[in-house]
Length: 168
Image (cartoon, rainbow, N blue to C red):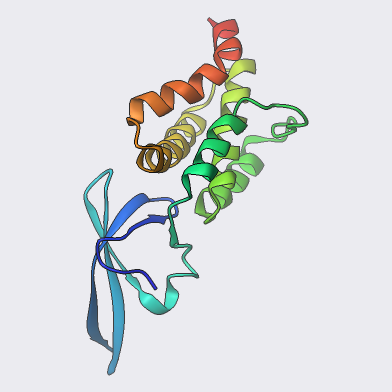
């Protein structure tokens, strides 16, 4: 169970803070809800406490995990991501990964799309997914590592500088 003032991750939304736990009458039954403020866009969400695990709410990763995730972008050994499958299939896979509670799944989307962008121009939909995935990863890593969003994003993009420079 999460507590008020605790920072959590809400898949597809990003880092949020549990503001409070409210009890509401729903269909004649009292239901407890987490009231969560998503930090990046000040959106407030209500998540039933009983469904928190099902929707993927989780605590932020540890500083050790965050550092490992950040450096994982550097390692492309054995990374088979994009293998020429069509956009629709990749889009469905990426969307499922963004809904995942696992940070490594979201990182996969960032890594794959950055690698694809080295081979071809990304479509509008791909650029939006990259922006969303990058935002999710960067917001969590910046909170955990206590560094600015801009610095974390620059670090990730630096791992792909060789690919991104080829295109220019």
